[in-house]
Structures are given as C-alpha cells and as structure tokens.
Image (cartoon, rainbow, N blue to C red):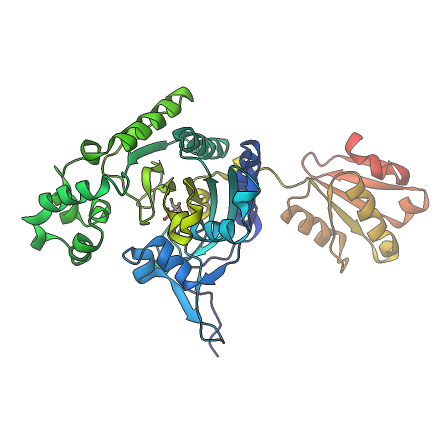
Length: 415
Ligand code: AMP
C-alpha cells in the first residue's frame, strides 16, 4: 500500500521550524498586548454563508478557493479562509460592543485556501491578525500599522516596504469604478479571462491582476485619489499624518487594492523585498460597513490586518529565534539507573532542560547522542562517584570536567 502523505499545500513543522513558527506567534502576542489588544479564539470552521456574505461572492477566495463541505445535517460548512469574518460574527454574537467601547482584538490560527501551492503560498497557512472595532478615526489605522511594523522589526526583517492607498467608500467608489471601466472599455478584449469577469463584477480587482498584459493595460489608468470624496480624502490625510508622527515611512500606491470586498478607505500592504514572488507579508485595511452587513442595527466602523506566519518564516533567520533552554544530558550506567530520574529533576530545578537516553547504551553512545542533541553539558552518574556523593559534569564545548556534589546539582547554573 502506498504511504499516506500530507495534503498538497500543507506543511509539517518540527524541531527548529516549529520553534520559529511559535516564536513569531509569541512576538506577535507580546507586541499586541502592549498595544492593548486582547486575544479572541474562534472556530476553524463556520457556516459557509458567513464568508460568502462577508468576503463577497465576486472575490477569488469565495468563488474558487474555499474548502466547503456538507456536514452530517446537510448544512454547508467552510474551513475559514481568513479571520475577520469570524471575528465580526463573534463580536455580534457575544455582544462584545456592549462590553468594550473599543474592541481591540488579536487572533492567531490556521487559514485554508485552495490556491495553487508554491513557495510562500500554501493551502493551510497561519495568520496573526488584529482588529479594532469601534473607531472610524485614522489614528486607529496608523496604530494598527505601527503594531505590525514593530512585530516585523522585532523579528529583524530588514527590507520592509509599507504601501498605502485609499479604496474609497460606497459614496465615492462607484465614481472610480466608472472611471476605471471607461479607461478599460476600449481594451476589454485584451483582458485575461478572469479580468473580463472582474470588469462587471468587481472592476477594482483588475488593478491587482498579475497577468503581464492586464498590468500593461492598467498603466495610465486614473488614480483613485482623484475621485475620493471629502470624507475619504480627509481620512487618508489623517492616516498619513499619523504614520508621519510615528516616523513610519510609507509609499503611496494608488493601484493597491485588496482581495476582499469589504474594504473601505484605508488599504495597506507590507512587503518584504527580499522575498521572491510572494513578498506580501502583511495586509489589511478598514472595513466600516462589514459589521452592518451582518446586523444593520449594530453598524460599527473597524480596521484590521493579518500577516502570514509561513511567509515570515522564510525571512526570519534561525539566529533571531529565542534559543531553547540550555540542555544537560544525564548519562548513567545500568547500576545507577535508579538515580536517573532523580538527577534529571534536579537538573530541571537548576533551570536547564534535562535529557537522557532511557535505554542507557554504552557511555560512548550516550555522549554521541548528547552531542547530536546539542547538549551543553553531560552529567555522568558513575557508580563509584555516586557512592562518594558526587557526579561528574562535562562541558561539551571545552571538554573540561568537574566534580559536582549531589546537593549542588540544583545549583548547577551557579557553578
Ligand atoms: P490576506 O488575508 O489575503 O489579506 O493575506 C494576508 C497575509 O496572509 C498575506 O500578506 C500573506 O502573508 C498571508 N497569506 C495569504 N494567503 C496565503 C497563502 N495561501 N499561503 C501563505 N500565506 C498567505
């Protein structure tokens, strides 16, 4: 029988890579808490309707990338492709608006999209996201961007570029859509098949098409800044002022749109220029109308973002990850096996990680294994030494050995 393999586009993380993934999440958690965000944990699957209504039927995610299936009761269920829709559902379902004037929430978790897998793009991937529900002020947008920048800088990413834009609101967006359609109308036949559909359903998405010919056609397209209404322009100016007050450099990209329908006003993306094709590490924007879309009575302005953990893992160096605790390998002989667990516990009490080979093979094999595991020290439980009340400690780097009295094992760190 052929061996069972993982599903295409998914990953197994172990050893150093698993540490790296968790390290990124821990930095994100730490920074988010300093910005006053609280964690929200929502289910990995939701009713399909939440995403089709929230993200938009015309988007790539909803039209072709969702993992949907019928549950035993015949209801359509979807593995979440992103986090915001679930946060909004939980916000409404649990009346979070009644508990906090401003809900500053962060989440971490796996997302699922049936995209074509390639380096940095997977079908199961992890996102770290933040959402601020309850403020329409541009300061909220700027603060959220600064949180993301701080996480990425703490992770020692160097080639970061922040791109910003405003995608307008339901008042001014239609004017821009009309202007864009006008610009593209004469070259409609040259658009790729997807963009032909986008032309009617969601013309802004053409700005985001990766097809070289479509890219060429949108060159010279009008910029959205020219059609923004006063409210959206003011908001955009406020965002830029906020970023400047924080000394955050940004690049205005009037062609920047995001893959989800719900964005209004601010759209932003942080790119890591050192990565290849998949260089967007973080994306987000404002979604002032999404909450009302689910519950008109609870209209709440909001802004959010998410970064992809796997994509960051490609840039974060092993050296920047917090090291694992230093390890002491406890080596013993069959005659001293009865002291093995006791010694390991003392070692842990001293603040080291303790490891051993339960089989107690030859001393040579135990040392070889200790070396392979990267142990800093080996504590040798010799029968004669134990009788005299001590053990030997070998420094694996220098090769030096010293006697340690049994009572002193707990103070190993000070020796
Ligand atoms: P989005 O939810 O599409 O705005 O994406 C936000 C971030 O999630 C992106 O900037 C990527 O870092 C990451 N991301 C999105 N899709 C994938 C994917 N298929 N595989 C890995 N990371 C992804």
